[in-house]
Length: 123
Image 1: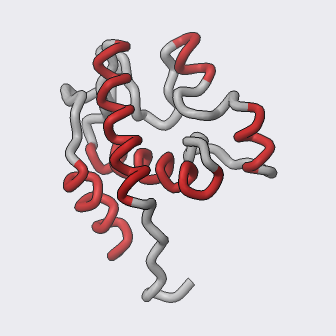
Image 2 (image 1 turned 30 degrees about the vertical axis):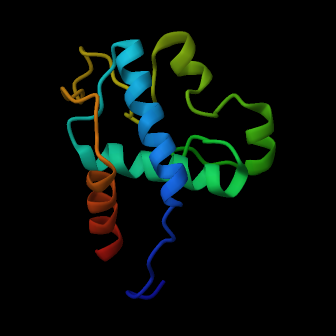
């Protein structure tokens, strides 16, 4: 991979949809975003990119042999089954207040997401 490589960003439409979903879901479930908003931004970008590519927000923090099959199974589509059943988020997107990496935010702006993900793309 050359130093000029830049990953393709998710569409503005799906990034905004995932941002709104995440804020609403965090408030509804009493969970919080990671204290490192860079983590939150990268996860939201990954969810939105999977929504662009596969039509569903497949968890971006896992490896899949067949992403289309995983989307169809729906187990790892956000919010995934472990999150819905036990409030366990492997991606550190939705954290219970007692989690060591939980921040205090349940909101993130579109601009914050792009700023954080652009920082990673530039390095």
